[in-house]
Image 1 (cartoon, rainbow, N blue to C red):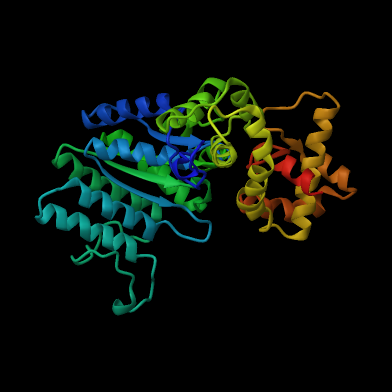
Image 2 (cartoon, rainbow, N blue to C red):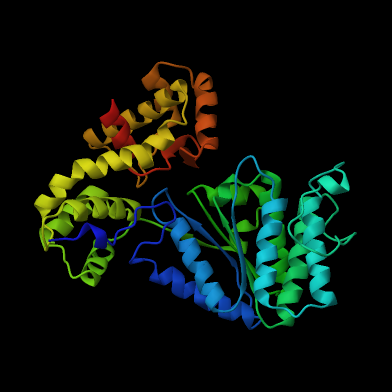
Length: 403
């Protein structure tokens, strides 16, 4: 029988699956970027975009592991709407500088002091004993990365960190998850810093991950942002890649999936990596023997859907107010009506904001607060003017099932 203890599937937020299928191109491309930067060749920072559940955080972590293996200094943090950049960026760069292995001396102490000054600048008026300390045991450097202008300060900070990395023939990579949640002034600062790095050829790179509208956020901040970054859209897996994600881990545990089971799994999951792991775990636990069959998938499907309803969809739906939920359900209804009517639907199933107002019998202006709140909560996004879509795949199907 299939042993539940040996279940290889891992449906966790940011948790690496046993088989990272469909991401070979991004990993190989990043390896080239690292080597080019380390040799002083010009290269752009990277941006990963995609819906929830496509594995952006998993890939971000895999890219960081690649940089670690290349002996780069690395740091990572997750942006939050209610948090400024100084503290988390300072903490990430502190980790990266420690990983560089630069011998202790004046150069290292100077950069650590600049990181400390950068971090503590967001506490105007705080007494010395009350200031947040990033765990750096050298005095803060006055007059460097502490002007109070985040754009000027981040450029100076990256410049000093890059110089330190160049001293030891290595590089520094900063990984920012949920990058669309950066404050506008912080987005501008990151763009300015990357622009400076590209001109000075210093070995520092930023790798950001975020929702599909992240390129628009960057472009609104700096018109030249499309030339600063290499954009990588992370999407659902093809059938062949989904088969790899299921078959290879099973084979490692002396089990296999029948062909009809693989077809049933792709139909149920749509090829989205998180759904593949969630369904895979439930089907494995309920399958009586190997090979796993389409009937096993059918039997386990309700348990998988319930798990997703609670942990993936429900947790997000609960964050919405009654008025916002009404807006979400209208989006789901309109998207379903488009499909049923045989209308041409774009890849993300977006709907027009004007149609939502008409569907609810409301004036568009009266729905602006609900729409804006949902945008800030990361439940919907606007890929083009006048249209919106869910950031979570299959969310409309979930809402209609709940109704």
